[in-house]
Amino acid sequence: MKTVIITGASSGIGRACAEKFAEQGWNLVVTARRIERLEALKTELVEKYGINVYPVKLDVTQAVSGPVLAEFLQTNAITPDLLINNAGLASGLDPIQSGAIDDWERMIDTNLKGLLYITRSISPMMVEQGFGHIINLGSIAGKEAYPNGNVYCATKHAVDGLTKAMRMDLVSYGIRVTQIAPGAVETEFSEVRFHGDSARAANVYKGFKPLNSNDVADAIWYCASVPAHVNINDLVIMPTAQAAATIIHKTL
Image (cartoon, rainbow, N blue to C red):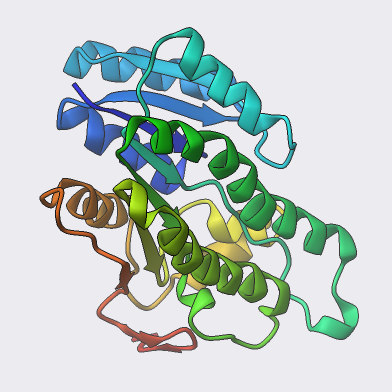
């Protein structure tokens, strides 16, 4: 039975991935800062699917998070078949000249450094075992910039570049590396971006049908379930109503 590690698994795409992989019979290592949500998720999925779920309280913005996770896997003799670097966020939507430095640091620490900390500790385990798959959650913001997106776009462009470079570094060890780059997905994303302003967040998705977490989890499952000799390098997934980062057909 295979095991998937999912960062940021307490909500949104990460939680949907946990459900999807559990449904397919995979064991889970789920990480997030909100351990109470992970414990509730464990209870639900173990009862529903009879798989093993290991919740790990983890803040990926801290450099120690990678070694802590690796030690947990080694202590529990867990083989990392798949790592989904899902933890990420947007914070603020301001032009560069008035951006909040705290927002910038939060995005850089989570979206970029967090991915690096976890990958740095888990990829050597995959190298040693001679197989594995890493899936990084990027964004359409990593393919094209948009007004006021500045630092968020920069972090996701970095994920795009890192994914390509990681694939080059790991290809000789039989490790697959994939990027999933979604467009508009209705999760807690906008509420976090707008610092808890739920009315402003809800307005983002009015007038069209955005993706939901399960849509993205289905795409991730597809990339993980293709034959071992196949790698999906890069998958951009958008709502039908969205043609580009800033071009969305709304009926309202």
